[in-house]
Image 1: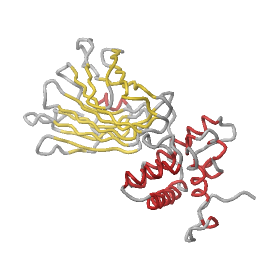
Image 2: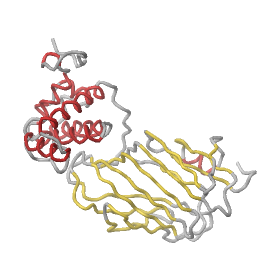
Image 3: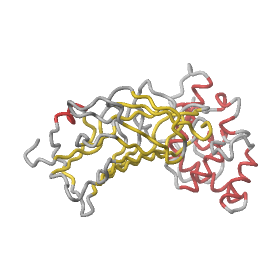
Length: 333
């Protein structure tokens, strides 16, 4: 009879009363952690089920599913426990490739604690992961784009400047090893009858450099960002980019339409206080045609006294649009 993956709560710290998830996590942290050559053979049945690893998965596919799931769950822990778990698994870039005792020593030095306390912090992190692993896995949208996903994105659109300016900051997670560049698509829809010329410039604020710009159409551009160093599977990275359209007239909306997984998105728009919009409304996962039609969603937003509107979204669906739209005409919509 197979062992149940349900955790046994309320017991002591003996192996008998340790939950199956914790036992399997402890097995993974041995040696080189998730960098171990025999990792696929050490993944227990509970973790296989929680990470959707099947018998037909090749070792590389099994490792990818495991690393991405554990990286995601570690991101939900408090900062000290997140650090402890990533170090234990060898997922932290500064502790990767070392054996467990050395990773624990590194963690102890970062936490400014002794190794025994560092081990206790790892044990606590694993107990928290046990709770998270026992919950249903979140929805996963599939799309041909691969290589990385967006854990969080913050955008600031300045419409009180001429020309307008957009700044975006993203925290991404690598879904492959040796990820060394990102393809960043942006669109600035042209007004009907406007001059169809290349219309968008970009420069990196931090976290990489723009090495190529591709003008796909009059409204759409792609920028290639080279990262400071290649990312490992599961490694997080933050970057910022500034975009400036050369058009003075822009469509009255700002949206993110994710083509890859995006977990959190927040946006703030600053309008010209001398000429604010009459109405602003939220776009919460709508098809592109809804935006083109300019129909008020009824989810009104208020422009504050400094001319700003801010909002945020979570667990975005790929292919739908999130953001805000506005109108200067009180009778429109």
